[in-house]
Length: 170
Length: 183
Image (cartoon, rainbow over all chains, first blue to last red; front, top):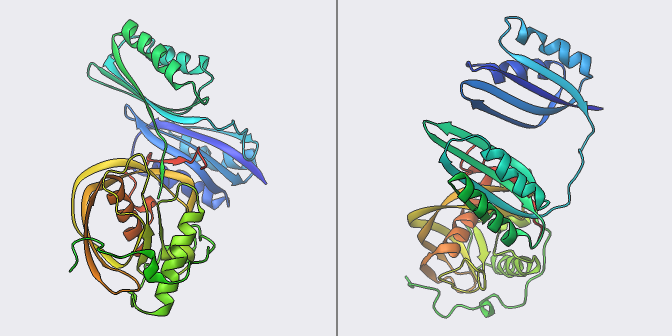
């Protein structure tokens, strides 16, 4: 059974999720993981589903693009994708005046330490730019990463915090 | 009503309990809620001992409710002793038919659960609570005031007894995560 990665993006309106999910359900596609959000008025969704072939999914989703608003892509992915070795989970928060290169500078620090960004959101609201990222850091690297992030914070004139995101088992 | 746990100890449960298999979602028993129990019945006392034994068998586990071992009953074991986030600690205890009667100072925190082994989630819980329940073996009613991590653990377990998982209380659509650290 093939596994497909599908993206849909376009101006937000009510019913996009219902339309996409309905078309895929009609194909017998089983939605597994998905994430959907709104980015400055554009609705963006990324999902993985199993069942249909690429051509079937593309044909089924084609009606979404008839009016030129929504754009969808479909591609086959390998089931269970590559698994990265687990590190220690941390949350990075950045906030400050918007300026070019904040995401690049912060994620470069994380990458140089061997950190793997597993989730990241940025929001620009008025003059305030906010970045929140989840990152798996190699064991024992957090102190060094924190120091490097501090240097970046000074250079960019933003606030950056790094804190553990470990969960408690209840 | 006793203000705290008084002189209750595990000795009230008699023989040491046995480790039972932990049920994981989507098992139906986790979603149905539990019936009130008779804290003096042999069956309940045995289950209380088994909950303690099973909780202690899992590294890092600070609480275990009856539905998590497949029994739809309102009882749970808790022990946050030694946890770095604990402030007030009442040691190991089991409560039957527990209810949250006061809750304040809500704080977010990331929770994992033995019954949802592959996900964690951000959940807002009261950091100060008062819980009323009954002790197994003695039938003594207690009123327990606590805070911090023990308060979070009590709310998590009371939720289990009502058929709720932390997944029912996560802060938003992007507040659940693949679990990355296995104890």
